[in-house]
Image (cartoon, rainbow, N blue to C red; front, top):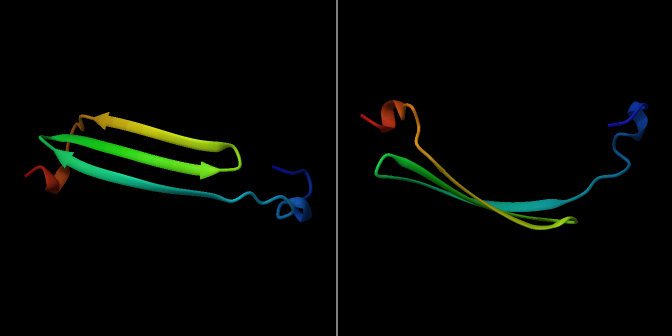
Length: 57
């Protein structure tokens, strides 16, 4: 965020990540790994979707 549009591209930070997704027994499993200047951040989500649309039929 910047008050001046010319300053928007002055401080770029690089980050990388990888994610894995799986649908097993009507549950969605998501595992993400993120790497950047702030460190390493793993996240895990397990969701029960209200509807899987065409995947659930």
